Image (cartoon, rainbow, N blue to C red; front, side):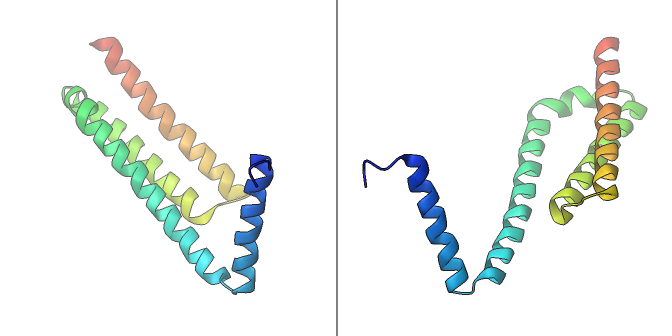
Length: 121
């Protein structure tokens, strides 16, 4: 087994796991684990973003004008809600287009506000 190419070995492991899921009729359990994994991934992203904000952004953003703070945090909140929509529903077609447009607009608003405040300070 040591002479087997790692790619082939990994494919065989995947095939065994897939066969076990099908033979044991565990598709529902797999779907549940997939949904829980998506939620956990979203929470992990939120925690990492919070730690980054707490360590770096809070002091800098706190000295911005009130309007700039509101625009920046609103754009960030809209992006988080948009990403949650993407992770929970896996949209396609018009919904995917709406996701991309909303994400682009919120990133643009946040970036432009941040750049404007960097330029003024």
